Length: 444
Image (cartoon, rainbow, N blue to C red; front, side, top):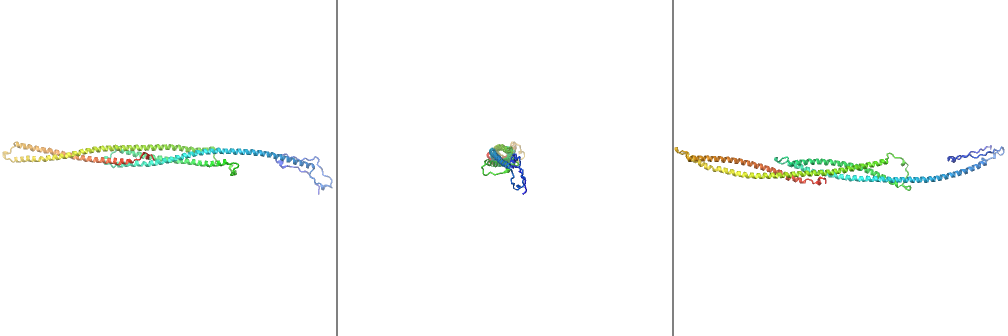
């Protein structure tokens, strides 16, 4: 074996270097032993360190062990403190999160309650509007009866006889009634369209509230479940990606504004519904009153017209009775005149016979003596009497003809008045008894 020079290597503690502990170089002896110069014992030297190095290494190990022990104790103490602090912080943060979840649940519950309240209001308003729409439809259907009655009255009165086709108060009131019914029907249709549009807006607002309410119910369930989670809950899991910010999330202000906007829209529709309901109620009341007032006006006009017809017919019948009486008297007068004329024929024959026989007297006997003059006067008197009787007979016959014409005119006018009275009283006024009541016209 060749002789080797053994050199001690420096000691390097990697753990101390990692902990920032300044490395300590080993103590070197001032006097390094020199190898023996004897060549006889060169193959038997096995020592690598000197006793000084051995003790130095031993002390270094003890010192390093003590340092590591103190360091471990410090780490353990710091770890216990850190564990306590982190546990307290975690519990505090968790309690704060639970408290905030509870406050959030209260906010969601309040918004849910408000949404539920307005949903119920909208549902009630929509039901009332549906009832109003049915009332409007019934009122519109009920208005067809007055329209049919009024138009039928006008048609029936159009079949009056020629002399009775007069534009009287009844016809004017009937025309007003027809115009009123047409305008009422147009108003009812327009109002029904407004009610249908308001129902649609209410349902749209209700749908928005219901969707918002449904979302809040789900959120309430999630937050309620989250608030019930604890460190001992068995159903908790790790979701590392849940802590990242999600896209398109709302802020508390936008969350509140969204619900407030829905509630404001619902409140606006509730106010609009209430206003429309009051308007429809007032409109139905006004139209019903207008129709009933006009119906009363028409009925009153019919009554007055019938009274006028009855009065005129009575006067005509009285005048007809007087005319018939005069016709009878005139006929008897004519018979008397004819008899008087006939009665004058015998005296006329007698006097004419006398004059004829006396005209046959011969010669000087044909004398205009007193008997002759008396007979001539008698002839002239009888002729004048016959002429006056015939004149009076002609006048009587002419008067009788005029009386017959008056009788025919009176009878014709009485028939016209009877026919008009039948149309107005028996047909029109009887038919107007089917006029709808106030409740039917109001849509009930």
